[in-house]
Length: 196
Image 1 (cartoon, rainbow, N blue to C red):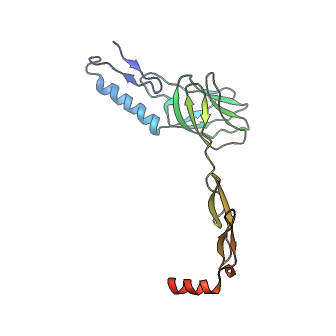
Image 2: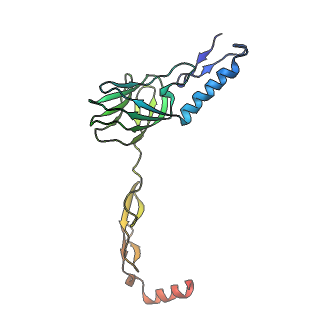
Image 3: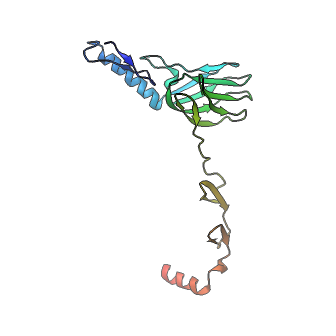
């Protein structure tokens, strides 16, 4: 029975007794493909009007097998980056194109994740064999170095730090900085005795 190839990364799957003396080279190629899928980076130059179709060749490294795709080029209309149907793979995609047009990462016949005209950032996406799904990473904490960050119902919130001597206070719903007069003198003396 001859070799077959895995569905997603197109690794060569040899059968017992096949390709005597060739297993080392084929295994090394398979390991290179795995390395590409786990940590590989590739700049994908997009055609100005048609984008690009990622390749998945049997038994060899290919641009579509990389973990990170950096989309480059000057586009003059909205374009697609196409992943063949049936491929299941995760990508980190950076939109480094110039030109104010959409870039859609999609499968041949399915839907995809869209970089809008001004979105020159990153997306974490996965192809499920039918469509490409945008994982929609939450924005990292923002604000300035003078803000206190906190979880606000699953999103990052922030309040501006108070002035010298103020305390952080909450009513159970909102947090704010208040003047130190909120702590009674007796409590302040007790804290000074306990904490020095």
